Image (cartoon, rainbow, N blue to C red):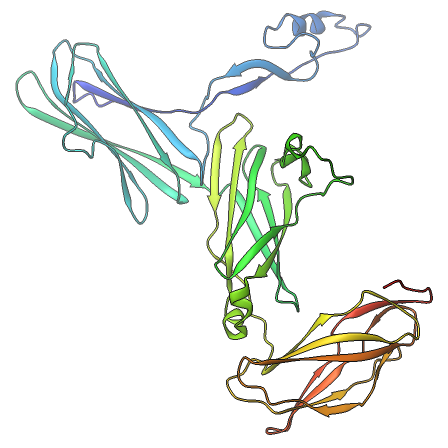
Length: 420
């Protein structure tokens, strides 16, 4: 950004500070037996920007200074240099520079906000250089307002302002999906897409949970054979995406997290049911030249699961059972409404995969609000394969309302003997 006002004896230039890029040349080559012969190849070999031995790759080893203002993305650090130059042959006194970054909803002072800041004196052809930095936290139009005040040789106080407008764009597109498990766990699937103009190296993509949950990242591969020397293995080497998590333009990375309720939250079903905020995603990346960026999402919200007045969960069940050999299932029945419940339990058919064993119906003890009771019931497996266990029916004896639970859990039934 360049600006000069001829009505003033001081000129102001604002230059953005960015890293250089690698020079990429256009390699034109041909077979030596073609009409141009070796002429084009000789031109390529003589180019100082083309590395030796890599003439046809188009990748250079020289750095190219920025030719334009470039793109600014949310989460990056905006750096620029303010240069005030004395174009006259006079000594200019009491030179002060102020810079304010103006967004749609706020103004952020970057330079000259301190009243005790000393004033400068400029000799003829002298320059004042001030570097300012600001972490960009808003997208949209930004206006850098630069104000320069000084005292001319005549003693008259002069000042002028310059405005520099630029756009801040979104670097990543984050899409989330939530899955509520019956065991109160919440699974978060997050898709992170690179929508910048170049590749990014994702250094960190972590979920900071809300006070109701703890988080387990499911984006790492456990080693097949654990080693005793844990210090030699780094965390990044265990990531699903490899040690260097590079994502190209318009590519997407999928991340999976498991959130488990804390004991104090799980002890209160009503509190856990209304806990819709699950946490924030914290993303840190670097560009191909090492510029760092950081982005944190707003509080992610899930849809609260709807359980009605009663909730039935399977607390204990074997994963593999033997055909026609009875096994036990531990059920927990919880009252999550605001009144006491008198329930009656009845068994439902298992569609041939398994059937309940024992008395087919029984009354349950009265449950106060937030109270639960546990039952150990027996099932008889009848067919091999992955089978859904038989369901149960609960009846509210006061309101005569019934609640059917038919997809409680699955077990694998085999003819082979299963060791306990």
